[in-house]
Length: 598
Image (cartoon, rainbow, N blue to C red; front, top):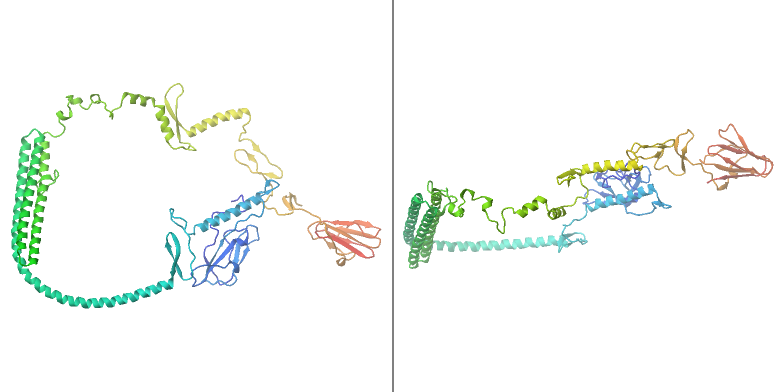
């Protein structure tokens, strides 16, 4: 920022929200700069208002120092109380009014100004985009329909449209309230009807008590069915225990694990048979209960009997499930404390019979200890060991494979110094790697010797010297900037670089001479001293219609120099330096006095 006269830091180019202090202002200066006062918009929110209003037209924006790029203050048309909030924001409308080139050459000051103008407009645009209506990434553009006062906006078919007035919504709510009141009245009527229904229910209760006697008779039948189901379940448990014991005995004396497994399967089959028997018994008892319920005089008692029979069937099914658990529960998972399934004991029989891999099954060729040697395994279509061709390819690092692998990885446009590169040592086939940093250092050392030897290389020890009015030189180890002593970015108009009266270097005012004469005869008097206060050279033409005219000038009003003298009428022109005094001495005749004004 220090190198541009129009700095533009990262900022939103707007003030914070502030409150009034009871005066119209001025409020400022601002924290950001502007080029034109028209770039500023002022917004005010008075007490009890819901939003800010644009009040720019009633405000005065004034630059702090009157510079082309300056901070500013805001003055309101009326006093702003502490209950009101306000803020200002830059909203520049971009334009182009000045060229940045002159005679085909870039004008740095105009270019800097134009770049900052464009950057300020972009900064303000970035700020306002952040406050705009946003939609999801997969959403098409959204149009917001303008609304009349008192209306609400709703989302319909991907757009924001008029959702109706608030008054209409209130009217609908009133209608809903009226409907609710009518519903309450209907509910009261329904409550009266419910009371009447309650009387009918009491009468029905008496009938239910009468039916209960019949239900007790059916309960006796249900008890018989339950007993039968329990008996079937006990038979299933006993059968499972017997078959499991047989499996253990057979496993203990068998050398073949297959026999033990067959015994376990038989035990499981017996358990399943027991479960089926329990289910059949339950079904028979349920059928008896249904038959008895069918001949009952009361249908409610019959339904109760059927429910009891269903419960009995459920108990029988539970027994069958328990029998299955006794047969198939996992190894080392007790069915009951200290008791295990037939599957558990079959696994134990497997272990007792030798378990694991058997030579007859896993060593058919009889190679015994070398059963897992790679030389004893045949190569197949889907080879599990490395072939000779594969070993050869791996040994020579096939160029097709390596090239394809290199082509398939991601490209790095600019390697980092630590990135590695591979190669082959000279005179052999040994691989090596080095870093990009090492490669750069080696190339620099190599090319430095070539270009320095050729005379086209300038060492950093060389210097650029300055003297007199130039400054800022130095050696070539870094960029150097040359500048004039006493230089400035904006010296102003009518300035020339040089030395002033004290000998100091810098921009000094250029002397100029006016060229347009005006008649001041009416305000001039003979032999009267006047001073040149125009800041430039002044041409005076004074004299009279009679002979004998002269003119004098003086730097201090004490020492005078006669610069014209004539025996004829009217004198010659007199050049008066800035700040000097002058007078004309015509002896008589009509006075004529002309001076340059610009």
